[in-house]
Amino acid sequence: MTTTVRDPQKDSSSLTRRRLLQAAGGITFLAFILTESGAYAAMAQDTTATEAKALPLFTALPYIQSGPGSSKLVDGQESLVIAWQTNGVPATFALEYGIASRTESKATLTQKSRKGDKAAEGDQRINHAATLSGLKLNTRYQYRVRMNDSTLLEGYFTTRKPRGVKTRFVAFGDNSYGEISDRAIAYQAYRARPDFVMNTGDNVYEGGLDNEYARYFFPVYNADTAGQRTGAPLLRSVPFYSVIANHDVRGKDAMKRPVADFDKEPDSLAYYTNLYLPLNGLDPTQKTPTVGAADRLADFSDCAAGRFPRMANYSFDYADAHFLCLDSNVYVDPTDTALQTWIAADLDGTDAPWKFVVFHHPAFNVGHDHYTAQHMRVLSPLFEKHGVDVCLHGHEHTYQRTRPIKFAPGDTSGASNVNGKNRLVPGTFTIDRKFDGHTATKPDGILYIVTGAGGNHLYDPESNNNPAQWLHPEDNNADYVSRFISDRHSLTVFDMDKSALTMTQIDEWGNTVDRIRITKA
Ligand SMILES: [Fe+2]
Image 1 (cartoon, rainbow, N blue to C red):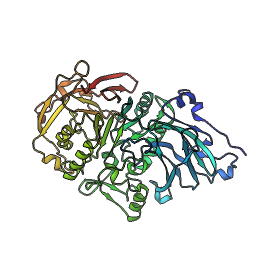
Image 2: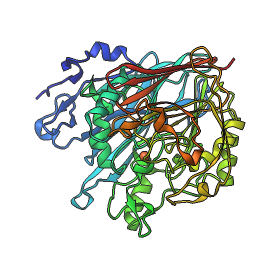
Image 3: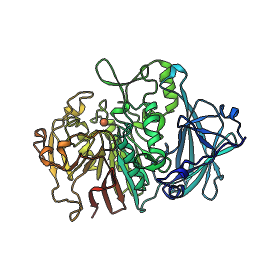
Image 4: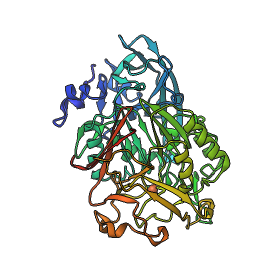
């Protein structure tokens, strides 16, 4: 019998398939059927119902990742990963791609099994990753995914832009909590038509588990239709970068220190198994602690395939910007010499006009929940010396923008107080009060942006547009914060070329709530 070919994009009232394909990317489903459970079954043409039961069920539809080898922008040496996930039913997959036709090249495929959260009941899934290499920059490629010699879907993507090409990206964090606001922010991010997403951490609650990615992340950010209450097909359209954060590590040891406990949560640390990000960081000595039975740790390690722990720190270029992404979790000591040496070399190793540093725990934040987690402040002089323009953070579920600041740390013992509650780093502020982002656009110092209002419940309602709440005696009441919005969820949209950067904060309904322009000259 011939199976029904269903195109959920075509069924959508909020976004037609034509409009979806005009967007940054898209997928045309050719041989899928939506099951009663909401998951897609891959069904080849002329598949009988009996045969269909032996075919894989897709637990995550294809999504685009930067891949491990993509830090510098070199035409013809670009690479990219297209990943998807199925249940444990085996099948033979292939991914073919090309510029003029979908069949010019074959991607290298890996399949890694991973135990699910109900591992004892045989819960298992397979993570499929297709690596496409030798790509040109800023070029649109077509691809198709085949299973057992039948084409399941066709799609396309555009590779990274080189220097000198205008680029837009969006940033948000503290999302994937199963909230309707997650979906609204995903939709607004998609409406912005970004070239990529830069997530600022706490990407998946409550504990960064694989089953939480399956429930809260993939269905929302890789939704089949775009809508305010649906989410959007972001992940299948553009690369999604993230940083590891506190909610990626769920467990605690006897001393209440964070640890990924694979005995309690066999699907822990899914950041390292679901994401495929650059592997150009240093091998961290202060990596996420892990405990658990040897076979579970081996299962994780095999699925992560070299990404743990290296993917905690990495960097990449996109058009006129360089991005340095760091692990700021409480087990990290940012005074570590090896870490600082690597950071300096990384920031000096790019000729990008703009330099961003992204880490979850904000160095400068005047909210009340995580004010004392100031350990990353100790890196500010290094960032200033090596030309950083903007730092992006989450952790506080608010939007906060500092004035341009320079910071000279005093007592740095708090920065070294690994796993401690008090990580205060007092010091001296030099604040650029002339910069307003409108008539005065050249900052003298670094702008620190908290964009952590990406979906989870908001913090500090009393601080919304209320400067009296933004002062802390531990900082000698320095007025380094310029904007604080906590009455709504929001995301940040960056538009950049080599000489100017425009930063626009958009709320969950699409309204602009803040905008500044930053220039080099
Ligand atoms: Fe956090």
